[in-house]
Length: 304
Image (cartoon, rainbow, N blue to C red; front, top):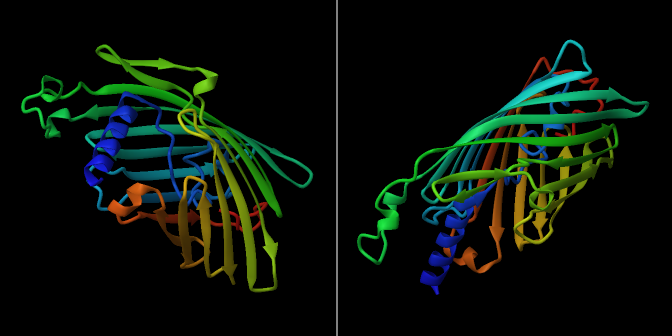
């Protein structure tokens, strides 16, 4: 059974490399939402930096490992905001590194703000097939590395928020790149879009405790509709924790410690109840966030 799981996961990773778009899979999007939606640019009403490290299926050889750095800020004209994201993603023998620039246009409404965002950039992907040991000896398919591919892409998003609730809609990485013949071919087909819909609320229980339920719906073109059901509790603007249940049979425990009003450290641990869960040590994710010149008059700086 173990060999079956290993071979199944291996060919899944090969398929990802042959036909893929880099849609970030992160657990702490409540803390660092920019990789999923460019419309979040400027939503902290301060220059905001975030860095994350994610190790999926820890202990499983060739499992995905992702590092992300992002930054965003409103401009002097508060109707506009800009941001950027850099990521490094390793899955099996394939590594992808990319950079994206974000732009958002923000509207002040009577009770909140509505933001529309665009992101554009590119990544480089390379697969080191010679690192693979096969049962067939010298297999010609794995005797030379595939040439590095340059993959442009772009994202779109919309985000509304006020002091009580928020809603987010995004289509990250709208181009799909398929490996055909000797290179990748880009296509932009609606049926291949990955659509994400996210919403949440905040309830003040008393002067110390806040409760924040939220839901994330993911329509991924290569898999069934997925949902994250999240519940977070925060104590005295000091520490928060909660649970997230993902309908792909995953449970995630999340926590965050606020060093001060500007700096926070988050950690999450996820476990899958699928068969592959027997052969790995869970998914670990660490996120650091820092806001420069933090201001408290934002529509709701407590959400993220």
